[in-house]
Amino acid sequence: MIVRRTVLRLTVTYTAIQLALYALVAIGVYAFVTGTFDYDSVRGDGVAAVTGVDAGFAHLRTGLVLCFAVLAVVVPFLSYAMARRALRPLQASYAAQQRFVDDASHEFRTPLSILQAEIELALSRPRTPAEYVRVLDGALDEVVGLTTLTGDLLLLARGSSAELSDAFEVLSLASVARAALARSGQTGPDRPIVAIEAADDVLVTGSHELLTRAVGNLIDNAIRHTPTTGTITITLAHGPDTSTIRVADTGAGMSPDEQRRAFDRFWRADEARSQPGHGLGLPLVQQIATAHGGHATLTDTPGGGTTASLVLPRHTRQH
Image 1 (cartoon, rainbow, N blue to C red):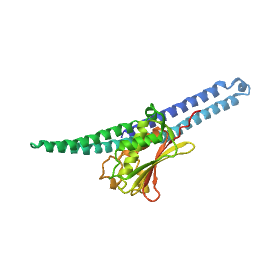
Image 2: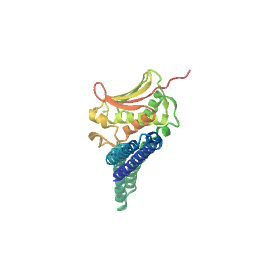
Image 3: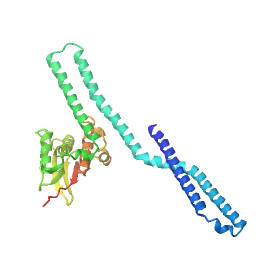
Image 4: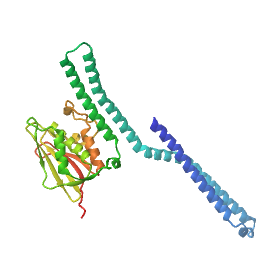
């Protein structure tokens, strides 16, 4: 409804502006022609000549009026098309925002409902200390999840790359990978083997905290979808203009459609819905990569699995 009203208002505005401009041009043309015409040069030729000039001016007026009438019919349709085209990005952004709000509301509603149900159950009758501890542990897990979700949503809402790049510095991708792996805290005998391969020191310009968060999300996803007998390899590479960090797992892999939709906010594959998460990990990675002037991709791992790549502009040492 808002978009429709805006389109109508823009159509009226565009129409009024174009018709007013044409009217001003037509009046200017007619005034110029009649004002600069030399009547004295034709009066010597007789009344017929003057009459012919007057007839010419009449034809000019008629032509200008007819053109205005035609434009009065055509311009509204052109203005409507222009208004629709001008508002197309805004309409798409508004629709995406509505979907985002709806999905976020759903993601908040589930843990809040769990919290309410557990607290109400705990208060329904006197409980033992152990039972209260169990309820509080469950509530704490939900609060931690809500805190993470809130932070992710706030980071996603900061769409300005300039705002995210305030604290950029030259840093090593190897140090980012090590920090992300240490922060994940998901290594152990019941986890797949994670190895970092860094032949050379790969440098980029960016935020250590944000890039650690992005690489950590890639590692967490890989661990979540890789069996304990599998392996995860973190590889660093660079080209003439780019630096790349790849996280390759030997899990079940993803279909082309899943790879394409994996960066959509709140989207989760069917087999991943039973696992913890909100579907914001990879969208955050893409958001951080974009803020650094790069991008994130998903491809198949040779032999099975998925390879997530974070491609960033390479930092060139200044001599």
